[in-house]
Amino acid sequence: MVRVGLPKKNPKVLKPAFTIPPKLLQSLVEDPKWDEKGSVTQNYNSFGVVNDPNSLTDSLRAPPSVSDDPNDSGSDLEEDGQPHEVAESSGIVAIWLIPLHFSFAFQFPLQRFLQCQLKTGVIAWVSLLGLVVNVVLSWLLVYVWDFGLIGAAIALDVSWWVLVIGMFGYTVCGGCPLTWNGFSMEAFSGLWEFFKLSLASGVMLCLENWYYRILLLMTGQLENATVAVDALFVCMTINGWEMMIPFAFFAGTGVRVANELGAGKWKSAKFAMQVSLVQSTVIGLIFCILIVIFKREFAYIFTSSTHVLQTVNDMSILLGVSIVLNSVQPVLSGVAVGSGWQRLYISRLVEKYGADFQRMMMDIKLNPMQHSVGTLEKLCMSYYIYKNKNPLIVGR
Image (cartoon, rainbow, N blue to C red; front, side, top):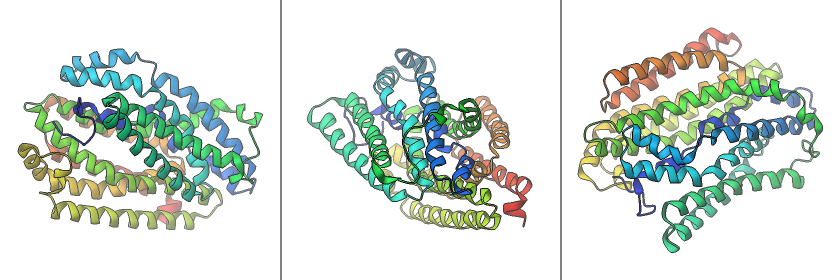
């Protein structure tokens, strides 16, 4: 199995420790059109008022995301055909990561709140602090004090809450004097409307994330599943690392397009989309070229297994193509969120993923081409929505 340089005990189950619960990810893409209340009228205090229900609704959604008995998660995975060791350890991880789930309810609204004010530098410095805390705690808990997998989970819990404390401290301690004047009772008005507004964004992002998770889970049903899962895990990890860049464009484009459309500046929204699209695509092409050039070397970061290295080498071209395509699609998703097309986007995603899962259930094979074809389908679907549903940005 792939060893990623973390605890020596049960290295197979470290992947779930780095997976964000999809039910809470919706707060990352809460409809940025709420930001228009502050950008159009220059009523800066409304930013803070809008941020409060964001955190409130997300904190209410956090308990359902962990309401299922974590002790049963291991048995559920075992019933799905996963090895006993992996299933049992995954159940342990699920319990120790419960505090992390609740941090997302506060972190992402605060992150969006600061992004809307162009305070991305603050987010970057707080993230650097969280990274340092995570590295130090992981080293102490895993290698020095030998807490193993539980230590890695605790380090993640603490480091994610460091992000919340850092951004919240900056906000309430004078970092946003125009937009934060303390908590307001106005935050309790319109919670249901706000919940419905954000739900479409959440479902959209859940569908996009669950597809990859289920693909990895179903790979465990294959013959010689160890090599298949290892190779797919290596490729998905590389893709996930690079996806952080397009994901940043996704967040930034959503905010920018919402603000510009709210101010009636459709040309500025179109220009923001074009710039983000070009930059993200160029970065994706650079990573694609690097992967093709070093296709025999990059997998050594994760494993020394000859079989896994050969499988990754065979998938490297498709991995590069997927990275390029995935560099475009998040930007289109960002514009969909900023323009309020979430419900339409959801219907297209359901149709696409439903067809994909039917194909996988009929013939479960390790076919890396399927991942690339699925990515291309999603990209074409996003562009189709553009051309037909927003003449203000695309058609003029």
